[in-house]
Length: 347
Image (cartoon, rainbow, N blue to C red; front, side, top):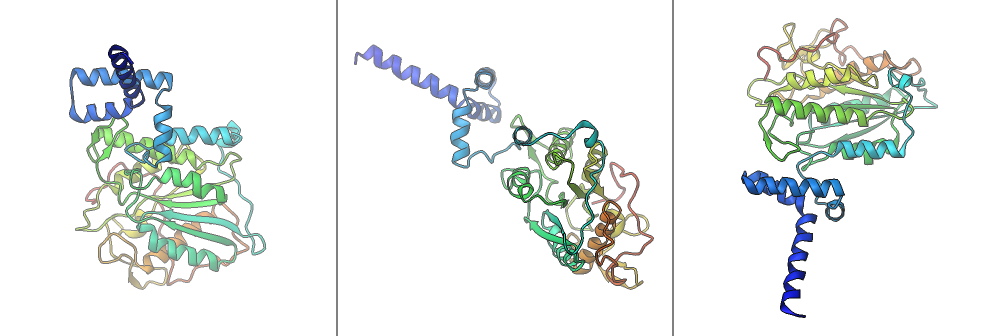
């Protein structure tokens, strides 16, 4: 080939490759903070997004498992879910789902999952719900996970692909303990922990995950447990602020029932307490030595409290749901009617 034609082919190939890789170029440019180069990268990326030129690169990356990076594609998951299922009517969406009463002959599928705090709680919950004779429980916890790091573990994707297809009637979920860390925003920038942009992005992720959990026929309830208070020296902070986000987002989503764990693991002033009395009056340790995770006693205590809450939404009279006094919290303990945006002295 003539030298001039070879140069034209090479330049054309580089231009096409640049269009296919525009998103990657923009991320690198954002990280370096390049001035005029960054503006060019933004323009090229905008063109490829509009014309869907980056579809091929994204498809290849997805096939190679490279799309677990810095952003959480819950909107895309929502779109796919909407295409695959029949949307619930507007009226049904405004009501708390009405589930049929489980019986020993027709037990109800119930799933419990979340981060490492859910491990002990989940083991207790699985054992206790199974003992009632009216539930078929599944435990699904993943250590060091949450909604802050989808590049490490993508919970929304796992819920849509692996959990919901099993069609559990009730989900019990808890996040937060690992989420108090910097995040990467949709624009590729680092969001400082608990800063206003961080809170906005975390709220977006929570809201989108809650939307994913909605059943098209309004036949699923999710008990979203707020994290408990953390003890001195735990270095696990922001549980009160995250609880406020969970609670406030659940208010407009009847299929999400927020459960307030805070009063069940604190004293009368809502301050962390490692040991508390159960319904029998005996004081026992409810947390492990790290002041973060539950003890077996704490796991049992929370399990019975959550089952009691479920019993206010579903008829559980066919099961053995009367807790032993040594395992259940005192009857005087109740959830708060409102969750404040922050708690004095909270870790």
